Length: 179
Image 1 (cartoon, rainbow, N blue to C red):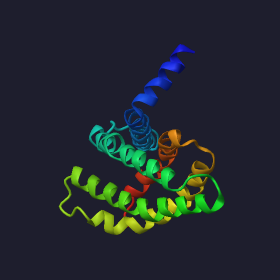
Image 2: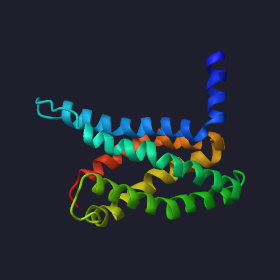
Image 3: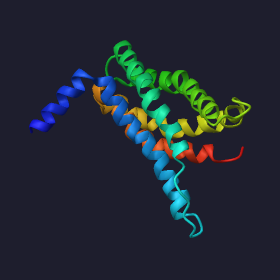
Image 4: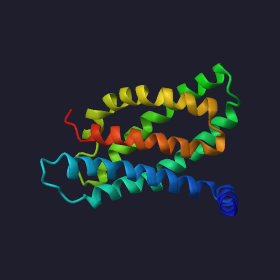
């Protein structure tokens, strides 16, 4: 019980750091699981080593960018639109999916291209943004409905991080596709 109380105190005292560590761990874990599947299991019996460089790229975004954006976004969203009434939840869903998500997808693709030292930083974004956004609507609208209805505001980033584990597996798969 003492450990749980200590964890609660740390979470209350340093919510951005705790959210970042949990979200980032799940985000990096998704790329790690993708590499385990593609490099170790489905690699025609020829296991390949993990690509630590790519895992690091996901770490940069998963630890150093996305959780901070989400923390302050949900803090603003929950302060501006209080409650779980259907009208309020719909407003949050629409803002989250159609205002926040597109720029975050652009940041993802452009940042990855930058870290991968691609000559055209926007090519992958141009090719994959629309299919990724459509897929995100199918995934995130139901996930965020549950978030805004049942998850307490203090736990939103961790909930989204848990969902992001599945989402980033999808995103990693999309990223590896040719469009």
